[in-house]
Structure formats: C-alpha cells, structure tokens
Image (cartoon, rainbow over all chains, first blue to last red; front, side, top):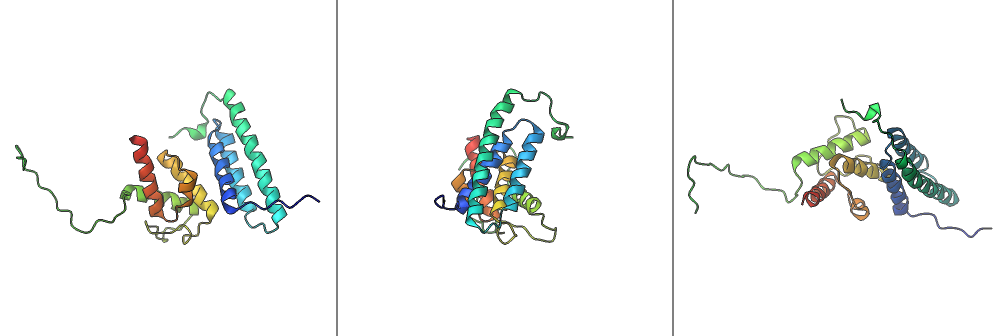
Amino acid sequence: MASAVPPPVRSEVLLLFRSLLRTAREFADYNIREYTKRRTIDAFRQNRDLSDPSAVVAAFADGKSQLEVARRQVIVHSLYAPKVKNVMEIKH
Amino acid sequence: MTSVTGSSMSMTSLSGSFKQTQAKPETVNKVCEIVRKQLALPAETAVTGESKFATLGADSLDTVEIVMGLEEAFDISVKEDSAQTIATVQDAADLIEDLVMEKDA
C-alpha cells in the first residue's frame, strides 16, 4: 500500500489554478488560449466538492501534470505562432 | 504668497470628508463591473467599494478568476500573496492603483 500523501491545502490548489490560468494567457493562439482557460475553470469547478482525500490528491496531481504540459506547449507553440490574428481577437 | 497675474483662479472648496482610501472612483467602478460580470449578478444587486466578494456569492475560485480579469483589464500583475488578501472591491481597487502607479513610475 502506498503511504498516504497529504491532500493539498486550499492555498496550493488556488496557486495551481492561478498558474494554469497564467500559463494559458501565454499562448499566442486564441483557440488554445481560450480552451485552456475554459477547461481549467470547468475542471476546478467540477472537482470543487470532492470529499475523498485520495480523489483530491489524484485531481491535484492531474492538475500539476497538465500544468507541465501547458508550459511545454507554450514554448513549442511559440515556435510556430500564427501570423494572422484570429477573427475573434479583432476588435470591431 | 504668490501673485497670480492674468485671470483670477477660484478654487472650489473641497467640502465633505475625504475617505482614507486611495482608489479613484473610476477604478472602483471598473472593478465593480468586472465583478458583476464574473459573478453574473443581476442589475438589482448593489456592488460598491465595501462589497465583500464572499457576500456577493463568490467562492475562492471566483476570486482567483476575478483577480485574473482585473490583471488583464488593467494590464498589471498581482503577486500571489497580495492576491490572497483581497476580500472587498475596495481592496482590489486600492491594490490596482498601487500597481498601476508602480508600473508608470
């Protein structure tokens, strides 16, 4: 049996939330940026009322790995940034 | 006393007591607008400087989203520990003003 990992504290969860949103902002592509923001918010809201500590730990670990993915992808995508702005970004 | 040449200037007297807060009303209003949009508050709900996010129905996730929205609206960057201390609209507006002043300095 794996030793019990203590569930994350509220401030850690909020820090993860903020980091994900901040990383989302760095994407140059409008679609990916909006998706990352939306998915983060939806996932955190969905898991808001988890009571089982192991589920909380699992969700937090999942969030952390997604943050790493997002950070890597920001760098990769910046190498292939779109040259034209998405129509949704053009202010009329 | 300096002598004023040319047209005379009249100073309007600043009557009434000044609140000790630093934030300009436009800043507070902009913050209120962003909060209202984020929490999808109906028009009847009053949002003022003293409104606490918690009483308006915001949970901690909402507060983080609001702070993110404020960062984007005012083009500032709120540090982690400052963000934790924001409880009312006025707190947010004061913090924004400080950061904007630092940025323009």
